[in-house]
Image (tube, rainbow, N blue to C red; front, side):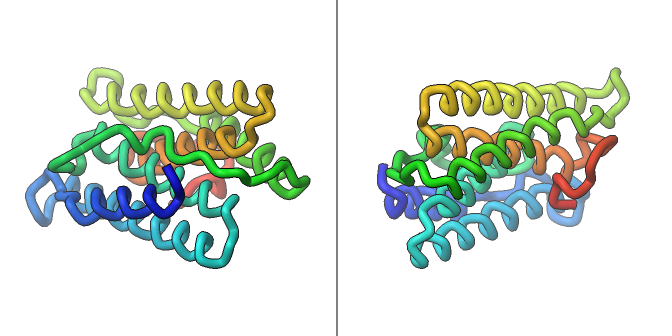
Length: 189
């Protein structure tokens, strides 16, 4: 899938998003936050793409996808024709410049630090704990896949995984599933 096709696909999903909770409720606000973050990172990705910055295009679209899928998995948004086809994003030749390798390394570190900077916030008896655990599971899986891609010298796929995983973490933080016990600057709060 090309970046243009991916952007069109993601844009169609963003337009179709609906908040699951009734308007005016806390969960409605959380769903709207998910929608606004997905839209913001979609815009950023398109802007990077038009400037010829494929590396940041990839990172922004992956981040938007992480937010979108986290919001859907947590039940904050609905998507009439949801498809997980975008989970794998797109493949694009971003080369292997020092700048790219530094960014991949930095995003690897950010995701790893992010996972270790969080503590599940809801009471252990709360149903919300399973949502927090899901977020950590997806972020942890993205970290492992990204590390594997780094080892295979596939920096585009590694960058996708690290950005996607961090999108999940940010969504979990912003929706109140976690307390930040480490570096707050790792999250969009």
